[in-house]
Image 1 (cartoon, helix red, strand yellow):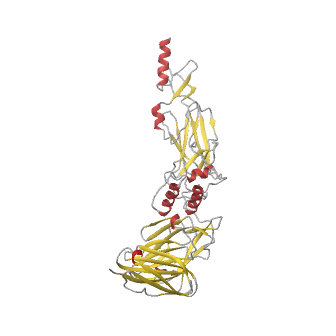
Image 2: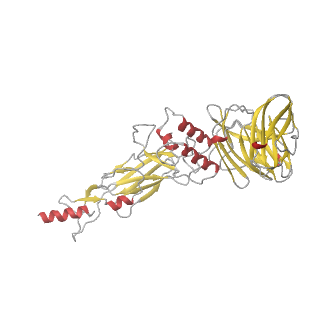
Length: 470
């Protein structure tokens, strides 16, 4: 008797179903099977189950019989059903896992399947990284990282964890910025899913969360196996749950950016400033600027903070994302320094680039998302008069004086670039109506040679050259 019991015990622990006096079967998932499951976090899974086992005339055993089903729904935290989620059902039975996708109502079902077995349900949705993503999400994420927030959904915290390391920090901000401007192509996870029945002990620290559902010893229909789907990076909640969609600009009221339509000459360097009538209300900007006939050398802060931004250039385009503003008193949103490859008007060489993301501004305390239009004005229509004189002496050995004249007082920006287009000197100060001067010392520049100096005043930009000698 002890021998028979030992044999039966041995068979059980080696994952072999056996027939008992009550004609029941046991299911066992061995360590190798568990290790093969794509479990990203710690989950519990019951290893045994029982069901009716029919005996054949030869004394062998047929699979457990019965007809059961497993079903559920997948939706966002805003109760929007998510279409085309891949759902995998795992079990120790032959011919598993089974796979299906959610329908337009976000529902899925596996039927018929065998009763009395244990099952593991895992949803995934990939290839949808850019859905709902824009710089508004970077603004919200930065606020979440740097300023503790209250009454924030745990699902929003999960969406903010861009690199899926179960914490929020500046790395998440940078990775989302890099996705927007094209420095990276994908997210680590496009969507993540949480058991809809999970209760969070600390909603501001929702990790680890349950991203799978187990059904132990299935008995008939197991319904309500629901998940909450979370689009990673979409803190604003505007991802389209039905499609692999592009980000959408939600306001029909546009924000106007404008600059002066100057005539640029080949090989000359210019600093182009961009302005808006909503200067004081703009909190961030997402810009995709196409260009021909110019090289963009540098992007400068104005009201928008270059320290809270990311830039990328590719194929005659500039991608820029700002998620903060400065305290400086500037008349411009931002400026770009360019070198002209050919003669022509600026309006013929800069345009809004049509990208998968819209060029948009984030306006007011509510961060209203608005499309951006870029306009060009003719000479003398943006700002008062600016006259730039030739530096003296020129060439110079130890120091030189730059002079300029303003028709009224206001803030002035003075930039000096070397012959490679690199910014080597910047000064911003309040100019007075009439004549103004600025003394530049040799030690403020980095080498002898040709330099370009640019004075910017309320949209007016003037550039001249000077020569530093030994």
